[in-house]
Length: 113
Image (tube, rainbow, N blue to C red):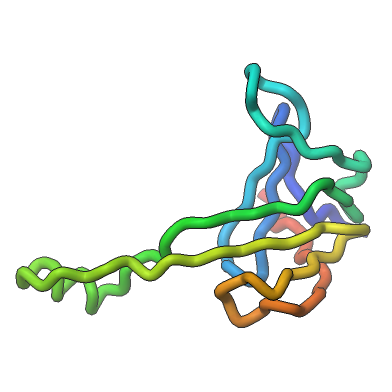
């Protein structure tokens, strides 16, 4: 099976099919107080515990950037991605703000450099 995560020192990352962006977690301690997830050691069928929660705002669109430059105030749209990764599959919890909330899908293999 192909690798679906990238491991770089104490970090593991994967492309989230819900957010269409990379999510990165710590799998080894790097400094005191940093949360660390357990990992089953497999890059092809990873399991991480506990759940992974990513919050932030969606990037603004070109249209929104033009409106900001014209002086309009634009409020960034918040997002939330909450999931469990088990045996290479990602289960999106119902509190996600993207269209894959409540779904479970395979992680996509990493592109080769």
